[in-house]
Amino acid sequence: MRRFSVSKAAERDLADIYAHWARRAAPANAARLIDAILDRFWLIGEYPESGRDCDECGKGAKCFPAGTYLVYYRKSRSGVVIARVAGGGGARVNPAASSNNESQTSG
Image (cartoon, rainbow, N blue to C red):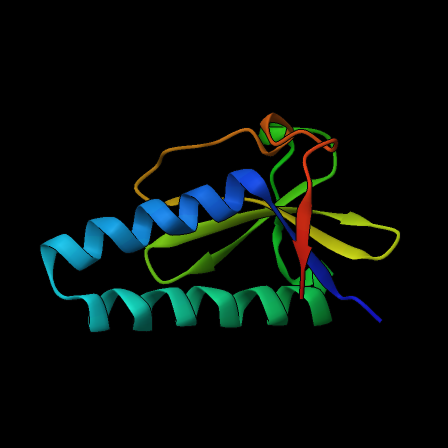
């Protein structure tokens, strides 16, 4: 049974985060950071109520911290959809901006 799926927008966010930290620190450090964020996806999939409500990001949206990043998601019939991953420095993203029509990868 699928617990979470990842939107194309969230996949792009992860690629951008990796590229930034691979340039700034080292590829190995960037890979560890991405792994830590992906671990949060599994946790969110298991416990979707653990995030805080983020209604300013769209109806039913939630967010959950992953280090200095925030994972934005919403519940779906098959688990949760990871909509976006953004820096936690006060920036807000609209999880609804990741279209439901975009293809998604599953976890």
